[in-house]
Image (cartoon, rainbow, N blue to C red):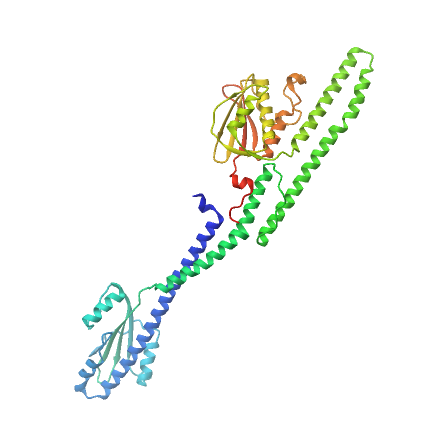
Length: 469
């Protein structure tokens, strides 16, 4: 969708995704830290109880040992006195904290054999065997039907050759996301998004949209006022660069056109003098030849001035409906042409300038191809107008050269048959000033086709309207 291609929507989605990922990571880290804390507390508690039971067993009469074991058992820690350890020799030990605590409580230095084994339990919930029915139900509900726990087995040798075997289990608490965490996430996201929206709307996308609008209008030959310096430093630098570029382009075009116009204007005086001198030649044939040459030069000078004025016109751009525009051209055309139906499309350009460009192309088609047929269509980005004729076409080697000023395929140099050679050059210059282009190609069935492409621009963008500010 076009909406998801905009900078503001992409920034919003990026921020929401980043917040969500950060929140999920925080929940996992919190759950892991809570699990480690619970394991450490229960492990130390089990180690302390085991050490106390060892002391009681070793200090009490033998006939009381069974009673001590029964009294020491609890729903989460089970004690058993047996002839052998439940932890085999060489089994993986823990990090030493539990063993160190047991030895410290027993005031034992490494004379007693103490074995500790840890292993994970994963799968369906299996409550401890000695839990009461009520605690079993609560245990299942708390663990949500799944068991993810660490079971610790502890074997401690006691006097008389027996072993005290201890088994306990540390369940990892399930990941929980309480209501206050959801509210905190929502409030944080709302505050951040509000700040981002304010910044993006007023400080970033607003200046960028105005810059895009000005760039498009400048490319279409419209007059653009210097843009105000707004937004972050990078956007200000970009705006400043655009203003400098526009100033240089305008000055370059004005200087080039001024030189061209001055040259054409200054040539008038010597040509007039040459005309007067030519009239004074006595020989008729020589006089007529000189006069014709001077007249042709004067005509070329006038055409040059017309060309220069056409490039520096200050006509304002307007939005027109292309079918009505072409229909009006057909009704007022000096050289009649056929107009084929096409889609109704609004487009923004300088009407008189585009009218002149199309008229030059149509008159060329009528002059050299006996008739002209105009069609138009649109694609996603452009309006395409084609002018077709039934003439001989143009040699492939000259297909681009005919756009050069004063170039004529017609070799007689007669103004009646060949013109000045500026029509196509003027047409292409005008269309390119609008951000489009003109191209020629020979038709397979004979004749020439001129294709005019003009960019279609969103109306809001073309007028520089910024709905975000």
